[in-house]
Image 1 (cartoon, one colour):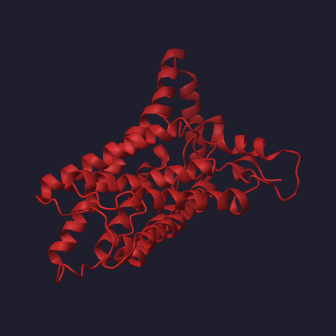
Image 2 (tube, rainbow, N blue to C red):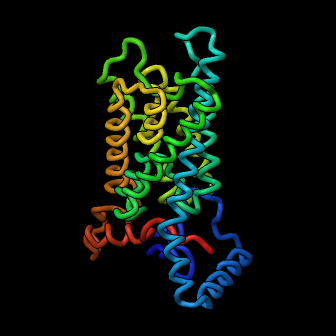
Image 3 (cartoon, rainbow, N blue to C red):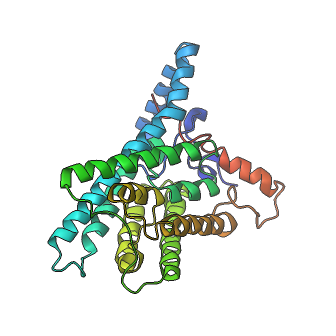
Length: 309
């Protein structure tokens, strides 16, 4: 039987629930354990009212602030990089996707490393959807993450417009001769690959390499799908550039495709690839039914995170 910290990688010492979504903060010997013990004792010695305020802030407020600024940074870098790509392209009809592929992949990897321990660094509502299906976040936080991500995307795109002085940047669209069906299918497949990397490397393993797995997934997805659908894979990222540029043609594709992809990866994860605590149907026919297992998995992050104060 697996130990609890193996089954539930997001559950940390002393009963504190702390998001470890791909951040480099795994336990490493007595030094880390001593810090956790000191933090726990410090938390216990706080007055009850102070401790309650601290818990509310760490659970409900801090993750949302992290998601807002994370999405803001992502949108700003994405829009500015696409503007640079168009400015340096040999012709308007032949942009080179390598620039946004590298930029988007690396900025998400950096965000996972820097704010992953706070909010999970979703900065993508398709990721939030997949993580919810995978049992890594509870329902009340899903709409709150959605709001924070949408506001962050809009702010980041607006800042990029102010800095670059262009309304032709960052928005997503289908390539020449690409049908709507092809665009939707491409977004479904690319988003499924990305969110599956998130579920397996970050939510399931809390691997120190999760940031790189996720970042490189974005990089290769953009290289593969840029000329078809733009390789968005991120509904909330698409929102800010669409508002600022005023270009809404086929905009719905960049919600339907990524969300469907998240459902595909989340379902595959819960049926086949997750550990026993996350599988809906246990192959060993254990005593706990699937409903109990879902509840157990969801409690790994009661809302998302109780960050160390």
